[in-house]
Length: 89
Image (cartoon, rainbow, N blue to C red; front, side, top):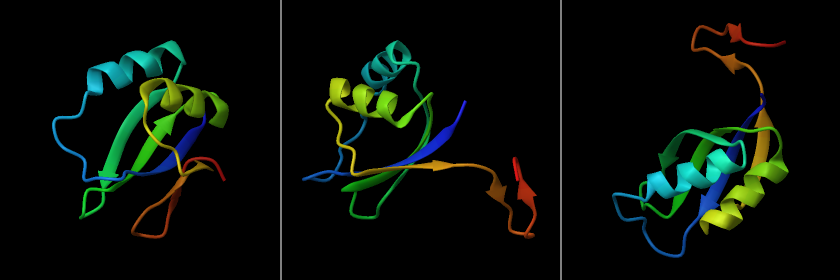
């Protein structure tokens, strides 16, 4: 299944804990998997790695969960710090 990076911007700083159980339930219903997220220092932006069948599935899940989507980029392979590509070429 493809991987995607999702950028999200929030009007206010994110508070913790987030309702991950609800988000994951919605994601499961849309066949979307949240792998992990990075949080900006000011806590108003996240950069999330997702596994999903399509960008549309991510948008539907985000809309249902009430979380924003600024951009989605499909990614493939990883370039390691030693310069080696891991994954498809």
